[in-house]
Image (cartoon, rainbow, N blue to C red; front, side, top):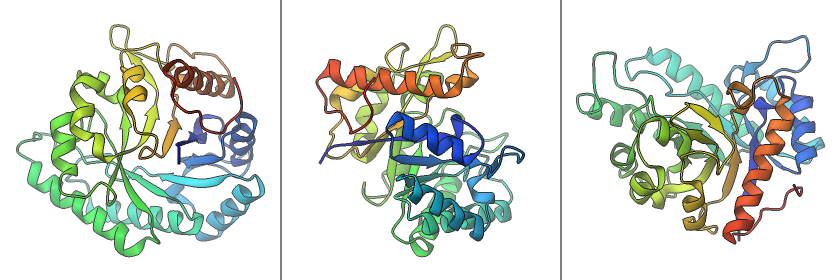
Length: 288
C-alpha cells in the first residue's frame, strides 16, 4: 500500500462548493477541512464551529463530489497551556463530533505553547498532562479517529527533542505526527538532519510546504530550506499514509496577488515532480 494525497482546501476558497471543485480539478480526493462557508455571502467559519446539521450537509457535499473528509484540521491546542479549559473542551468536543459525522481518519491537534512567562522546561509536565487529556478524550468520544499532532514553531513540539518527548508517551499508531518541515525551518532547526531522526516512527502524514529562512518566504517544496528531497526519499510510503498539500502560498510574498487555486496546483505539481525525481511512488492524482 502506498501513500495518497490530501489538500487543505480552505486555502482554495471560502465557499465549500468552490473548495471541493478545486480539489476535483486537481485530482485530489482527500479533504483536510479547516474553515468553510456554505455561500459566497457567508464568512468562512472554523470546522469546529459548524452545527451537526451543517456537518451532515457537508458530509453529503463531500460524498457527491467523491471526496473524503480525511482530516478535521482543528485549532485545538494551538495556544498556551493555561488557556481557558472551557474553550479547549468546547473546541475539542465539536472537532470530535465533526470527525465522527464526517468519518474522518484523523483529527489534527497541536501541543500547546508554554505560558507567557514559562518555557518548555518549566511547563513540560503541565503540557504533557493537557495533551494526554486531549488524546484520551478523542479516544473515548471518537469513532476510531486518530489524534494527529502537528509540530509548530510556536508550540511545545517545535524541535526534535520536544516533539519526541511528547510523542514518546504513545505508541505510533495511537498518536500520529503530521510532520511539517516548514515549521522546523522557522524554528531554526534542520528538518531532516535534526528533527526527522527523532520523530520518524510517528510520522503518518507529511505537510508539504517549504520555507526560505533568509527571506522568510513560504515557497513550493524543493525551493526552500526544508530538506524535503531528503525527507521524501527517506519516508516509508507504507507507513506515511498521506502527502498533505498545505501550500500557504496565498499568504506569502511568493504568491502575492495570484489565484489561490493556481498556487495550489503549482504546489501539487512541485510535489509530484519531487516524487518523480526521487523515484518515489506517485499517489493517484491528476498529472502536472
